[in-house]
Structure formats: C-alpha cells, structure tokens
Amino acid sequence: MSELHPNARRVADAARDCGLVVEIREFPEGTRTATDAARAIGVDVGQIVKSLVFAVEDEVVVALVSGPNRLDEARLAAAAGGSRVGKADAGTVRAATGYPIGGVPPIGHATRLRTFVDADLLGYDQVWAAAGTPRHVFGVEPHRLVEVSGGVVSDLARD
Image 1 (cartoon, rainbow, N blue to C red):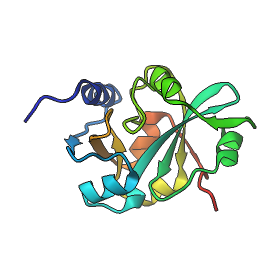
Image 2: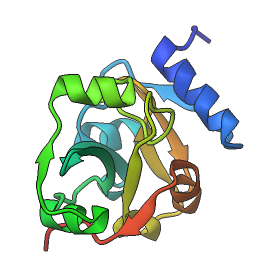
Image 3: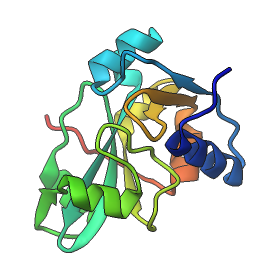
Image 4: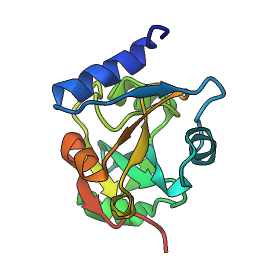
C-alpha cells in the first residue's frame, strides 16, 4: 500500500485519538462532489458527508450535511445561536480546519470548531466523509460521527 497523504494521515491520527478506527480509502479520480464520492465508493449519495464551513456571526462552524441535501443557512444560524451567516472563503476554511475545500474532514481540525450534523445522516448504517483531500475518504457509523466530531444533531436541510 502506498504512503498516505500527510492530510489523510492527520485525519487517521485524529480518528485514533478519538478512539475511532478508520480505513482511509483513496480514489485517484477524486471525490470532490457528493455524486463523485457516491459513485466512486458505490453507495447512495445520501451516505456522503459534505463538510461545509460557514461563519455564523464571527464564529467559524462546520455543518456536516447529507450528500443530496442543500444546507438551509437560516437553520444553521439558528442552531448556532446567531442570525448572520455566510459561507467561509477558501483562506478561512484552510486556517480554521487545516484542510482545503473539498477535503475538509469532520474531525482533526486546526482549531476547535463547533459542529452541526444533518439529522438525515442518522438514517444510514454507515456514512462516508472526506479524509483531508479531495481523493481520500473514510467510512463511519453516523452515531460515532456525531460523537467524535462533538456534533449537535440539527435539522439543517432546506425544505
């Protein structure tokens, strides 16, 4: 097996530190979108965890959203106790998480970030999240994802 990308290694280490055993899989063709990831892994697009980084008021937060769902920004703001919300730019994402857009994992961030988990992810036995790059992913049981991310389960999807 080839050596893991340094970002994927950091995710594996963060998982281990949380007591989570993960197998990181690499897909050279990329898993940048939820549809690409689902196709590559061979799962339903709903099992793909999109890690979205937003600013609520002046706090950077992470929303873990099921693949086909569109995030309702007002619901995220309400869950985070704010009203002003906007998508974080690439520089903010990298500074807060330590990872590039398209590869942000749900754990192992460079800074401590509050995390909100789309309730729809709990409808699956296993979900798949980015592991530090647009080519690396790992599978996890949704309840463990909530636990290790410190996430708050919330209704985040647009109606």
